[in-house]
Image (cartoon, rainbow, N blue to C red; front, side, top):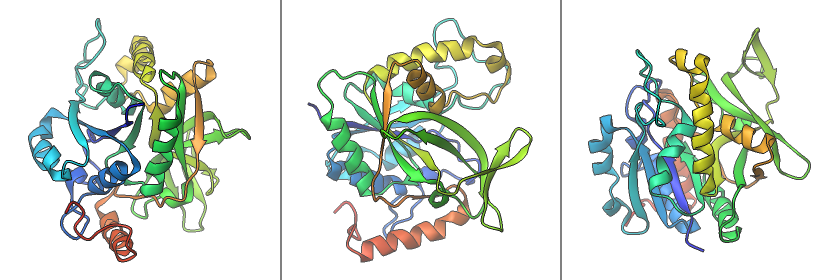
Length: 306
């Protein structure tokens, strides 16, 4: 089987962070979080990385992350998530400026991906073991497999920011290790008394600190693109989604439908990887310190791409 592909979601507008955080340096030589993800993916056995970006910052991003940056260790490609990339018969609603969401971003990879592939966020640090675990799963799939999906699950309490709220996909996992369903929780934060809450319909609602959550590290077979196109048409066909200028086509929406309808299964993988990320500018110093500690422990070289 061909080596799996890594699809990096980097089209976010970084409104909370205040700058193009995807290329912000956190390593000792200006390495971005993306650099560590690509380094880990290459040594885990991924053969190609595809970045989903926006035309608005394409020039600076492509210049920063062309293939020469990674020393020939992995093939590099780019695709673009834009508002007008819609199925035939649909138009961008007047006044809409917000992107269509994470699953729409995944759909952009169809034109350049033909192997089983993993999906990650550009601004999250997943750790080598997460990439190894996912690569091993994708390589284990039989040729032509369909509907055999996976995700790496993380403990909610280890994925929060001290400087603002986050969104997380809360997972319900069966005794067999397969996902039963996923619910998008927004406004997730830790209170002063240690409890974790999210924005419920009637106000703050508590959620277990040790709940398994998705950090958008998924593994899919290529049939996911076709299934997503069909579901996106259904999403856009609903008047409420078109009229709400902030409605988004999230990964959990598609995954829940495919699992619930019996079209796919999704295995929840566990690993010992450390997760951390940069959601707000105030998160950066801790990320810098944690990467420095990993370098001191020998997990990464000081100069990543030499």
